[in-house]
Length: 420
Image (tube, rainbow, N blue to C red; front, side, top):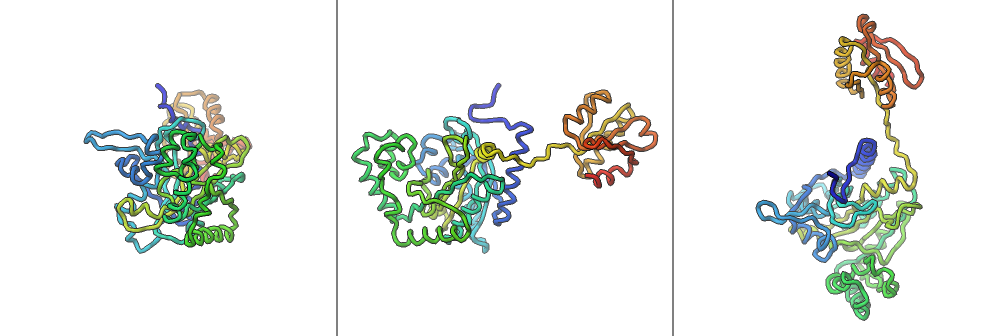
């Protein structure tokens, strides 16, 4: 038996890296005053059809959808925003006096796509959503948080691209310009883009198959169709990024793959050598109409999501070594039946006192127990034999220096807390 294609087992030695990264992201979220939300792993399919968009590849091709025993259509969540907004509406978080509502999540998502390095069918996303503010300053805050997520962990080869998708009026004008631009060569485009041209022409610009088509190079830019309000909004976002010292590039062809985005859109990419052909690490943007689409009041929102898998890939590509302590605090070596019995009590007491400790459970000889302690990179070995037991003492050996001292068993906890 093997794990299903597109999934992976994270084994000891790897999980510690995940734990470290996730804890750092939680700490960072707290500094920006974002609180954790946990939503179900599966939702009603309609949520993603309405929230993500019927014309997206996610809804059309990539969702894990099935009928439950009540004949209800259920989908494993392919992304986090729709679930967070659904929860925001369901629990009337918009009624809280503390606005905007600032939330973050970490959890598994599911998409049926061709597995490749850094892209799995089950993957883990960290994301944030800020709901209830139309201030360009919070767009800059969310972008700053996204950049900090990578920089805090030591990444340096980063590129931030931003764009404006404009408001509804700007998008409609741009939409018609795209239709007029691509219609003469419609038959030269891939089947998906031929459908997109009718349903959501903006997404033609995001096509991987047709990105080298000559018409892509001179496609109408959304920036040429921004009305006054949209242009002013985008200029304010850039001004906030400037005063925060965040470097960026304006990319007129940057579009997000989900239907709910408007105004600010952004992506963060890795420039690290050897990272791979797909350089995008994360992306996000503003979605002012999504809360209403899911049954809530008119509420602006902005957010982003990043893949933990791709984050770890970027760390590896840049040679960043995470400061993970792989050493074991203590290992108890016991010789003799009575000593083994006492060792169990000592191990339990040390653990109760918050000290990391282990012992032999395979009836190894003295030398074998020391070898086990060495393999576990143990800081201190506690040796208990019949002689030590008769004196109610235990030997404490520093494995780095080789120094050894004898300590009264009833003073062991205090002694270990002191030297650790």
